[in-house]
Length: 504
Image (cartoon, rainbow, N blue to C red; front, side):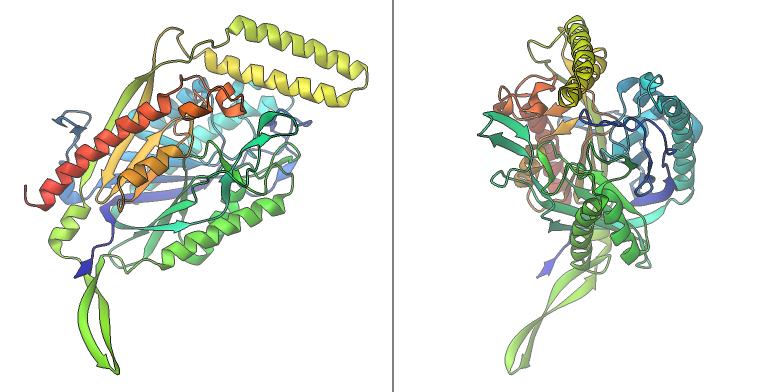
């Protein structure tokens, strides 16, 4: 009798760099903010690059669809994951960043997956805002960011070595539901809902070499980094910074953070300008990560029942025992698939013309309010202008009347499945997959390579008037279709894996 813990055997290279923007850069992320420029730095922003390759004996791997293997890319696939402390980039800036990093690092662009921590304290990096206070610094900063990321990709590639990922699942109370019905004002708001469901699942992977040395940790958790909001004027990674500090102090190795499906999840203590609260939230998550890491067995071992020992009571003894070569071989399974799912746009989307007209009305209303000394109304008008600006940016990148080809990246490393998708998804994306495939580590990465279609809520949220669904561009039912599509592929791989384990 033994417990075979989930693990992945592959090759990994890791590199870390500082990507903090200059103080004074355009910083306004929130519509309610009254400032434009940052005035200081709470904690540095970082980028962490992780290059993934199959284990040497798995260089020829199964790449395919539910129907069987197909040519879906080079057999010797490498994935380059880039964790960055930013909220997101709009499509034009995202495309330019990917192209420049690919060219500078000498890797195919399709192998790059930029995973935004989604911090709202880093500022909105948008080249089209160059005319605003601090906006003149955005273009040069994004150029330097691309150069830094390309250098880190090269450095990570130089550190590629065999590694074993050991997975643990934990819990953390940081994330709470933030879809709240305000009965007094008869409207939905985005704020702490003490009665709403909140997925508190934490997935952690310890990366070790074959001497047992920790080379890094991977943290997958779903919670909007919205501790800091409109009153904050400091560049900040939000809670992610203090979480990393806690984990890296204990492990002496880089921590790679992956934002999960947090569309309706955020910290209970949030929407503040107090950086101490952000650090407290980060330590809460960091201690949960360390607790999960402590639950892991030594790398490359099973937990095996050794038999009874008479000691007054008859004790059942369990020991850590090395995995067999056959077990390690299965941990090196490598599969990858990238495809698109056509999802419909929702009916009744505003036109660019109607948004431009609404923006003009709000500009005039703001001017009138300021002339009358009504700063509260002026602030609301400024926020509505921001909403219109962002929606126009999104609508310019879609083709009315045509479905949107939603990109999906899915790969299997040994016992674990990784999902990488753009946009901001409600928690059902991860809870459904983990419920459907219990016992299998499933890492869910969202806001990957941007967030063109903003939020993707479940069908029942549409029509409520809550912020997330009012700006969603995809039709009701899109999230459910996406979940089913991903589930079908994981199920096909699970059946194939069962056949391999049974000698089929």
